[in-house]
Length: 274
Image (cartoon, rainbow, N blue to C red; front, side, top):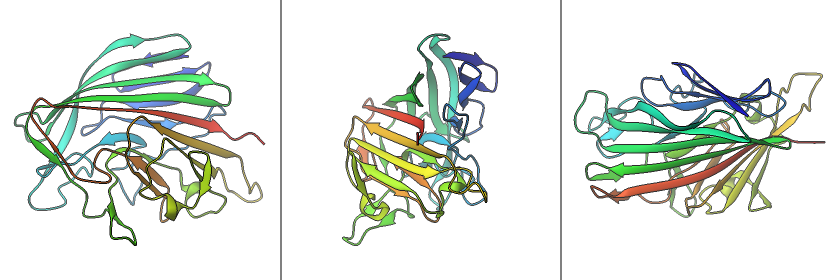
């Protein structure tokens, strides 16, 4: 594996194949897109017309005062937030696993005291038919905050509402309602409806790429999230394909000044071998 760093971002390569591009110069939040399989097939979308704030693989939260997720104020009492890129450190340019630590400041776009300061670690390696990623975040709270759920959180039959803030991935259109998708929780096949809100160690979303006649059914790819936390799953295949995990998905959460919020996720993007 190797890195190529420019003013716009960081490219992760395995030989001549682009595994992913981490975009660091977006005005509101860095994100990873495209996110590719070793065969060079992208599983991610960024800025689709229906949800322009969906940026491939991204990490964002929402407090009572500042919305770092939607990239717009959705209620009168909040302002838009940004994750401002500060710099990279601990850069590994070549090897079996490459990556870096990024320093970020979370703040309102119109200024003011930072809400969070983050050290974000991103690493990648090539293992067989897949690329394996580690996304780790260490967020230091700089002023008292409350992580809230979105007003668009998903309602379950038992009355719970499942939020989607945290580490989120918008998946390609061919995974949207085209059939042939599978969801696995800790190795057990389940429906997407049953998966919503579940706590697990590992989730895999498998779908079909390039569904263009007469190639249908086309090649398949799988995306696996593994977490060290006990966060609840938000997952959809309709009206669009998406999954996320985060610290406020199940319950809202108060954060005290000086508190450190740590999250680590392992992501595998693989070609499904026939």
